[in-house]
Image (tube, rainbow, N blue to C red; front, side, top):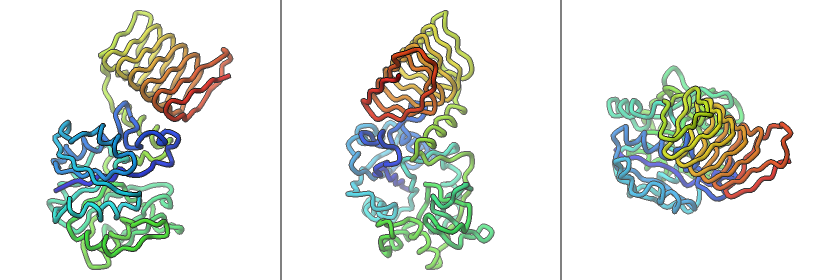
Length: 353
């Protein structure tokens, strides 16, 4: 079995963060989203992995390298434009050959990985195996209609509700999917839709099995989903301390201090993570916060936020539900208490009054 990871999307829903960064490399609990995907693929015993890249390909290549850090062998596949998930299968034809493969979107996260998903496919065999979960707004997803456990229909972002079961961004296919993607024409969105490819397999009499998500699943394409994924990962984490904490500081709950982190006269209430060589001084850091490496936070209060590397925050009271890109500077000019919610792209500078 091989793996195919589509990672070429522009990430428009995460702008301005993704104006300068690949959305798949935005950190959750101080680890790029794509790395969670690679962890899951390696855990499932898959080695040959193709990563489909677009305009952010250089950044992804630099981060992942040859895949050896995960025990994988990575091949990079260029996609000239984000023309749909079925298009990624089309351009990966030579890499995939006749082998079955798992397709795992590079901005999706699953609490329990894909081991049971892959094992079932290998044991039972079928043309396609799709992962689904119940959602409140199915019109935002590809939707699956079932009769019992039998898949009868798939529709991409339906206008009328036919089901509350959404396709999760993880699929398993045998070689018959190559005939399906070659038969497609672009949808109204101008893309080759993977839902239509699976429907084609059904229409041709192929067996398509459904697998319900175990644990949580998050598509991290929007800020609120990314913050929620960060919360979920931190909730399942264990405390660890490789940093320095002075006697005037107090830590409670699950707190992770990475190597070189320094906590001075501050209160930290987990679950949270502080990155390598980051300094927290005269501050309060609350639950569900991830602060990346080489940051400085002084005289500030932060909660339920993702702060990427090399940020500087001074006098910020209080920041919550926020997402700050790399190298962001946020400063306050007065002491009046008020709360802020920010989403700032790389190297942004914000003066608060």
